[in-house]
Length: 534
Image (cartoon, rainbow, N blue to C red):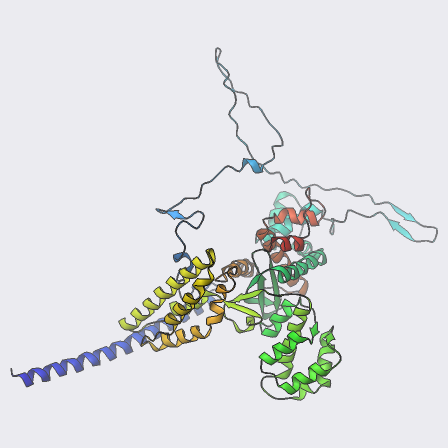
């Protein structure tokens, strides 16, 4: 075969390889699409069967994969935990000592005692008849002796505390609580259990609101997250706000930025037009004419939603049909002004998963959610798979460097880390979807590298996801809520339970202290939150 003929065969083979490669890429894309459709069908089938759908992607494991060796307590070694299980007897108070005699044959010598501490619990229902004296005054008024303030509807404070602990900390449904109590000999119905779960709500609600304000005014950062919620037959959303020392839950019909700012403000219809509010409006591109109208008015504080909306109507803002909506931006700015007016979030960083409603104030982004975007990419060929794998390795390596920086902050390392960030996220790999994603993440450089300025903030929102998981579990077990009081009781009690856990307090003892039956007093949680904040 001559040289020209060989060249012709080579060209044909190259063309055939190119055609097959193109066809293979099309088949891979079609296969990925079919896999996604198949997963959607499986999820729909699971929904019809009322089964939880499987997550479409497995977690990447970046956070665990970048742990510093030996830095985590209880790190596994050879598949076994290295955490030592010490004795907890020092935490117990011995109430009684019983000597157990042994039958020894004659001639045996006494060799002392072998001690074992046994813990037990006794739950015995009691029924007490209270004979309340009745008196009639000379004026004809009837006076009846007051009962113990802990008694609710014929049930004592100990039973009340047990029902609250089982439902909110133990995630037990009302039906199971009724079955448990009935089996113990307590005569109680589901309706009466529900009443116990919402009794004395004002006491707990006041402390929960004070905990939120204490956390927002003293914590150096807050992490936030939200999840869907069902209330009164309608879809809604629950927002979690917390830090290392507190947690709070708030449920409403929307998860907009306006709703988020309202929850940060304490839920009160409180609007303030001050410097912070005007700066916010300017940053959201509100017309300078509108800003001047708001700034020039003598009234700056509005105590109700009706007053605020009347003020906007008087200024003519409700008649403007422009983008962005002046009413929405002005309301957001006034709520932000109210937050600053109360001294909340003075220098705190809000760490979120890049949801738009959380982009307020000093903001930082979660690295786990950022890396998850790369992890979820579906490459169509070997070249794209290699590009995604290289990008993930580089992000994992950089995330490990940021963890090292948090452990030992060094201002001189900030500039090299910023330069490394640019090199990683300014790369062009030839994978169009990956390149677009890297470019998008590079635009969030300031929020992703906020830890270089504030080493005390977390690199992820894992704490918020852990807190909100308790809410998700309760939603899966009990479904939604029907009454506003039931919704508020769920949010308040879950928030207080999580706050007690973070403050290393027993939620059961906390309930006893607030219901007047605790042996040990527990200080107000807001003061403990302030003390726990650095």
